Image (cartoon, rainbow, N blue to C red; front, side, top):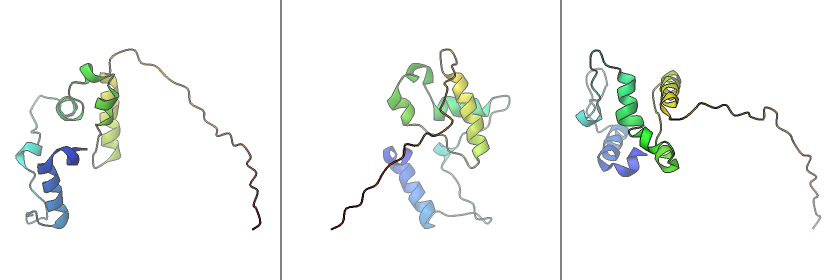
Length: 117
């Protein structure tokens, strides 16, 4: 998580959470410039976000469990996360494969014996 490795981000979140961060008239906060990704005309903002923030160097680290488990897609809406996740999946090298999953849970009966004391 970014909070663990970035003391400036940690401090920023603490300021926002405690109400110390100044707000505008409509109760919004100004993000620090280093947290902002500017929109570029003719570009693909989602791809820029993936390449620069979510999974930079994916091609080199696609098989690294450590690299992949230290990343997350966080957004205000689940639809945004789903869309970005779908795009990220297409970036992985290799052939697509489908795995089968067990769709029914099989329960084994358990006998509980209570001892009297």
